[in-house]
Image 1: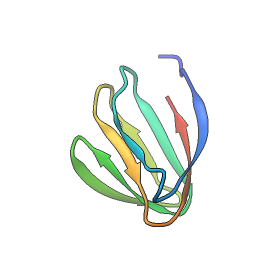
Image 2: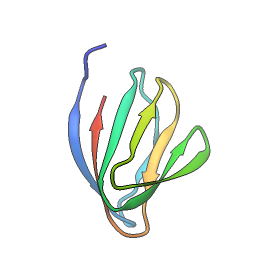
Image 3: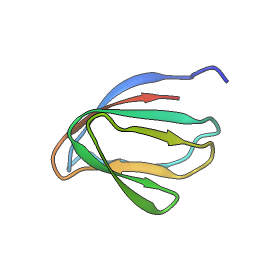
Image 4: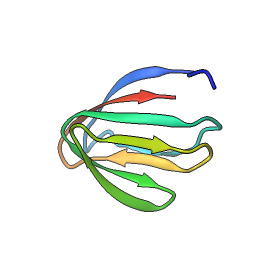
Length: 74
């Protein structure tokens, strides 16, 4: 499946990445900071160096208490 986007994102407490879904899989790579990824209603802590694999049509989002820099490929 070809990727539709490759984006670097900066998420803060005031700008969380809210829950949503896609028809294609996504990969998130955490470049800096710590956050909580929510996958299908379950929270998973992530930090620098972690890779998150998101299956198609699984609701997902990301929030942080500080700031996190991450790459989204999907």
